[in-house]
Length: 129
Image: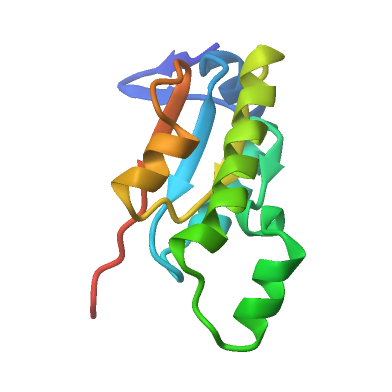
């Protein structure tokens, strides 16, 4: 539990896991916004399972991206459904989780998050320097 030391509240990293209710965090943003970096730090601090969303792409998508061709919405559908399945697995097990997914279109967020309870979308935005 948090302890009060004067006006400062200290929370240990192991205590952070107990003070945050189980939920699934979906870290979204454009490429290079820090999704994986932030997710890995949250995983380290909270101890929650972490899934790199890009690892859920089917082999056909990976090959298409490697060849320099952009994915279209039809290509993304199996990937978005895999992200949604991972989220549903965590929720049905009543366990927390952290997953990255660009989720840039509202239609994509309808598939991955929809009206699921216990899911929080974290939008990472970078600023130009």
